[in-house]
Length: 404
Image (cartoon, rainbow, N blue to C red; front, top):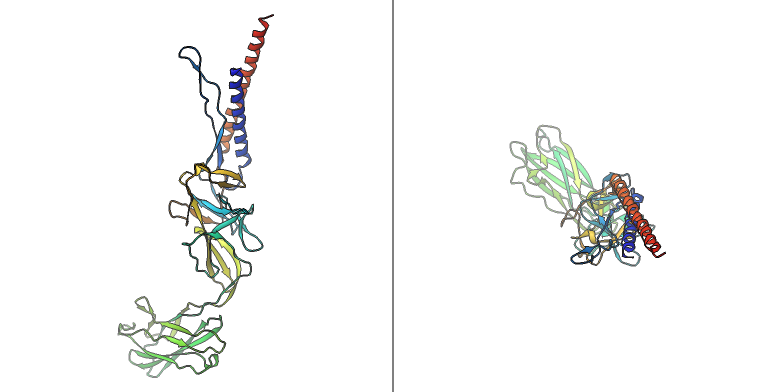
């Protein structure tokens, strides 16, 4: 009977190994799937005669996951993401349990929650205003449809321009720039430059009185240039443009007029026509969200109707010292096992975690040729042990016939 049990244990083990190969082949095209490898172990031997030992079969097969990198495939999906290197996306299921996956084919539900294609909530950090903080706890990534980007009032503005060095004293050059108040309304700020004398220009900054509850007092100053047509080092920063009492009820605001770009002057005085080459200000109006996409690094970018793009979220990654101890739960997900190290949550490309690629997916790491080779080996092992059983049966029958 021990001989029968030995062969039967081998049949069971090889059957389980064939099941593992079958699962691998079935998931050949499953996003983020990790190959399961059958691990055989012999059972304790028994003593047969003086100093002799004989095996009693093979222990039940265990299947270990191989977390080798799968091929990265570019996609057209704006919410697709692939991990290149170590790490897992962090998920929570409906019961609040933490799960981990390498499959980054995500989607939004009707409430704007970022989910896997099987319904688990993707974890990370989010702030619709674009001030994402990644030092706090992670949570569900929720971006409601139709979200408006709040307006941002202008705090700095600048004009890059040249003032004609050949202009006569008293000549005037005027330009303007649109700025935003706290309600997102646009106002036109006018800047007038008047030739004061050689290498010297006065400027005056004004806001339309019609936009205010009371008349605006222009902000004035003087620009001085050196013999090379550049702003003289003695030129000081213009005073703050303080606007109080917007007629529409917006907040009062202070704006800095930047005449320097670092240490380089934004205004020159060359013998060329006075002209503006660039304008800039840091405000924006309210805008509707048009689309959301996951970019490289795991950043969640929102595109708005005003043409601006804002980072409103960040995907989290989880790392384990012994990821091969994770237990598959189905649906491309894993959970911690009894021997798993504590999960460490953080940003991509930190703490040994890999990087995230947007509009890409990680393919299964199943090696088709290797699986077919294993399949043939396990089949031969099954057939050989089946032959052991039939041989033992013949021997048993022959032994029984000796009594007749």
